[in-house]
Length: 349
Image (cartoon, rainbow, N blue to C red):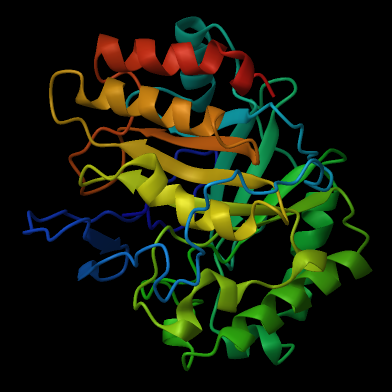
């Protein structure tokens, strides 16, 4: 599952998505997909390590991993930048940031915000903690709208807006392109991965022309593809090392998935090429210590995977139409587990 939303600004605009998760029978590690525009989508079963995703089987020896990269938001080996999408019931953004500072003893290092394709991207973000980097998730459009040149002026304006920050900005354009729930996915554009790559490179080129050199590019598929086809794998949709600074990934513990189920395949495919950022992650609370234990398991997984240089939690209880409280403090044990992770040396990036 992933959080499929419309725009998210730091005004209190509502985000869309996760509209009503119905109980469904599961086979193995099947995942129930949610789309913002049409509600629940079909159940998609993730491929195994050597299935159509192209991810290699784990080897007995540790894979070679990157030791540098990240563009203007540099990757630091052995350190993970920790941040969140933060929106809490009854609190302003500033109040939410202050609450998390009191609870965890530290500030967000990444602040995740969402924008529609037609929105004006931010030239500044009010309430950004000192030292924090914005992660701007910018929705896409149909391939023809971009590849034709019709959107060049819009893209150039976006580049100029982010350039005005005068500080590093992470840009995640057209995320989860390997799903069938967004208009910029290959599944909705003639099953054409080359079309997505062409759009990504065109946007990247216009930003270069506008000299928006403070932007660090985050390419971010979903943990599993829908549909599972050769043309829809992350490998088929990758724009190329020259055009990507961070490889991102969305993955949620919805149905008792382990961290390695969610993030292992993308790690094994790309960790020798680019630093990885887990751009959306959260866990369902099934009572008792289930959520706390999963957070601890996740922290250990990151500790064991040195190419992971960023983690962005989905920390909210305001997602429209969805009863799950993704916030980190749903119970004392979960907050303690998250705080222990946040205070560890590994997450001190």
